[in-house]
Length: 176
Image (cartoon, rainbow, N blue to C red; front, top):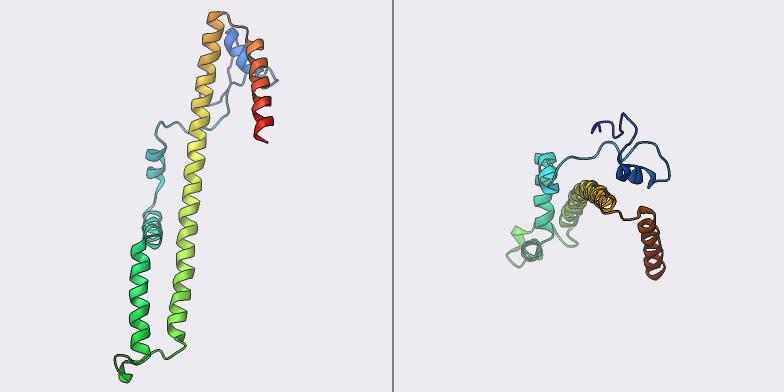
């Protein structure tokens, strides 16, 4: 079988492979989908795809989601307000009430933080896609092995598929 094409160049002669080929309802010689990732460790694959800016976005997002971020901002806002209400001295005031400069800085910070969060979420979605592809490959590999083992043991594939269909129907009716 050609791993690049996802099809077999000659007719399927193995009984187990014919069962797998017929599982989708069409006998077309195609046993699996083209273009899957060929990696065993999803984390290693995603790490290889990371760019420096992605890692920086993750660090910012991780810090922004921490209590240290909250503590730092509480202290910063407290000092800002104390200075600008004249607690330290009227000459130190630079952003009088209602603190327009502070409002602008906090708004800009919120814009940038939301962007960093979206960048991190997009990477998490990409990681989930890679994980899904790897799960698919492992499930397909397991199914092919199971069908071959079942065929070697003389198990009736149609009966097994009927039992699986019934089990899925029952599981879906209870879940919905």
